Length: 480
Image (cartoon, rainbow, N blue to C red; front, side, top):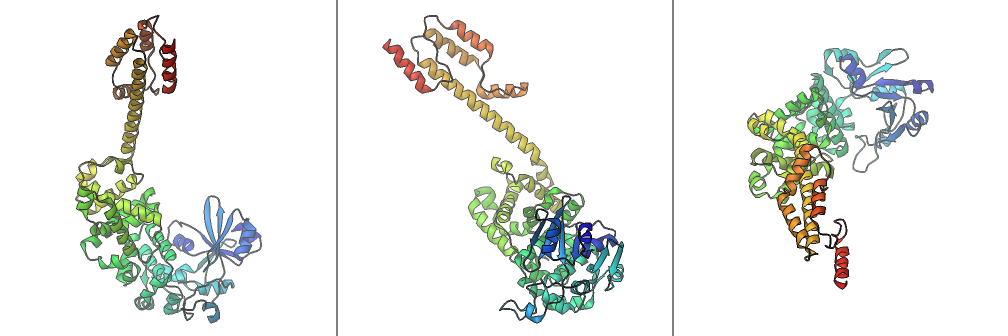
């Protein structure tokens, strides 16, 4: 803000940061609006600290102090010619909102009165030109202009109005309620990428359940997430609401898992996906490929309005397929415990247990993610050391067999092998004693082998020499 103001540009903090501050909440981010264009903003902060994004609505992202600030330019109402940029639209919907204007124009272009509050840093004063503070005190959501026009211009505004209802317990004005009922189907014409980002914002707040319930209450959910609306009154819908309640409680505790995109998609869709899969095929017959294809089809159907990238889809499939195994299998497969998704599956199963209340005993038997990782490392280390010791023993046997004329050395080596513990037992004892050396013989063993060896016996080839070298030495002795 100071740098923009010192460069001679008018700038304000606007939107949710001012609204949340007045409500006594801590703002999650700060949006800045200014008279400067995105190119001018980048000139002020430099190319390394500023990047211009967006096609429909261009803005500048400023990276400062480890945080990201969205800096937008004052907008004005576009003309009908400026609106009509697509052949399949008559100009009602705004496809290009990059027409710049003044501060007064920008106030009129805002969606709701509670979001049209500007904070002037120089005067340390809130600028309110539309009665937003009064509506904030009354906890009512009111449109700036006609709701029908605003929602047709940008259908995502209906979702933002319902987010205000779910997050802050606001009430919708009557004209907004009527407009949402009339134009809710337009949300399916919005960009899937925008809807995905709005969905992630819902899942990253601690009021996801309230927002989804508000969408269902005002008839918006059947167009935003049709499959969720279809099962809303069933047992699966009740389980999803319980999962969302657990999600909101975990976010209040700042759970790091919930920031993951795949985990957020899994919370709201897991009961639906489990209902579409054949549990017996997964647990008993282990038909993983068929279950994966079935799960992918269910994911695409449940999130048909969203842009689910391939990586998220694959992770979501794996998390859903892990659940039946964790529920009913006698022992978790090593591949499941070894999966990098197991910590997320463990947390997801915990939330499912809390939502249902029927899987508590099963959940207690599951290995904790850190314990499972420690067991994997121990088993891998023991197996690796045991294999190394076994290979060393095989090399020693081959070396002894290469000199049959030395019966003393062969007899001593056989006795030594019989008296020596197996490779796995030696690996376990060395691990308990804190030894990290692998395949090293003790000094006493080396001394006993040297004493029992005959003076006239041919020298024993070194263990580190390759087998090819040993065969060459054998031919040399026979020639001699």
